[in-house]
Image (tube, rainbow, N blue to C red; front, side):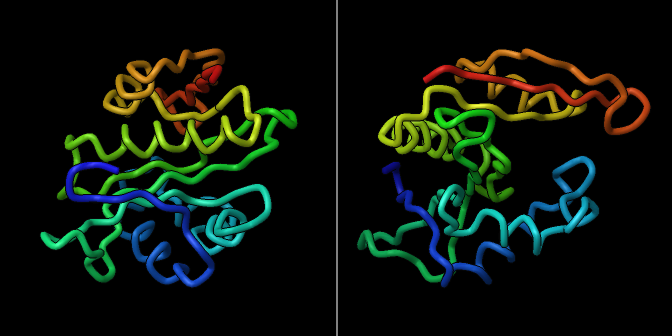
Length: 167
């Protein structure tokens, strides 16, 4: 829980709202998720409420502490059993532009760690790109460390940086 928002796992019924949220932040990624193999539909299909993957979502709450309709303000996607039975991979993390720098992504990541620890996950992996200094700083503050850099992976001068954290 956070001030003004709550966190929960998504369900199949959230498909349209998940799709809308990813489309909203699509151009924050390099390359945009819609331009990658399978695009947004494949990302949703592989991650939404499947046996080894899902999204955690932060939802805005009203003054009376009830959920406001259709208000996803941040989302993190993850896949369990990624490199081994005790690992997971963060495949998506974004915050609605109007709710950035308010601690929502940090709260989502901390809650995700709790969920994964309950499922005997010991390590979390993720990647970002060198042109995203805010993400690099964010992940390193959360205790992730870089273990591989693939030079020019996303174009000339744009490297992919792989991170890991033991939980």
